[in-house]
Image (tube, rainbow, N blue to C red; front, side):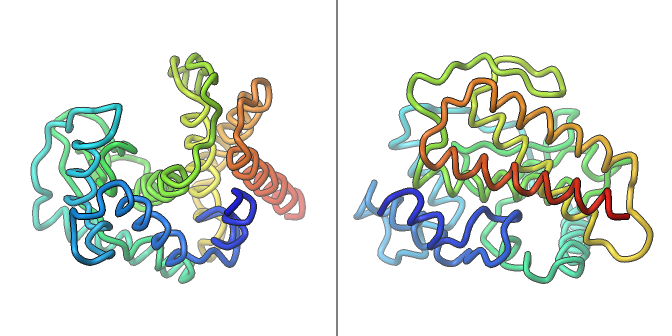
Length: 254
């Protein structure tokens, strides 16, 4: 199946396009993992368990990454995660499927907010700042789940060509990023912006929205200047560009 046919079958980009079919993307990811190690598990759904996926990556991935130092989340932290997830899904019930997949939450020992890694599938690391910060936990969870779902896309089709450089700079000033990393940053910014725009009542976190919209715009401009995209990368970029233009129009219409 061509990248465009696959993208259309999935229904577009998770968190960004309406009508995305999460189960279709999950089935494709499970099949990719099973094809990599057909005898690892009896059931296809077993390949979507975070522990099983991590073990497969440790056995077969050409690149490796060490686990962050972490512990289990406390009971209180687990409750906070559940409440924040419920808040996100009330704001957009269609996102419920994005948050109902198996996820391994870990409490970071490092003084940072949160992190995910494509090489540690379906694992979200949350630091103290995720639970005690001006940035709501809801935004952090949308941010990290957006990474996980874009990683699913990349398990099937890469976003960048093999000759893509590794010296892109994120709006935060972080250097040495890949084009994948720039797209992941743009994706989370667009997803979290959409979350804030979906909240009822007066505009939520207006200063944060301004920051995220600028962040998204810079990411898209950075990628457009050196577009080492595969066909799938171009599709993802176009979806994010269209989302950004739509958000601008909504803002101007207020």
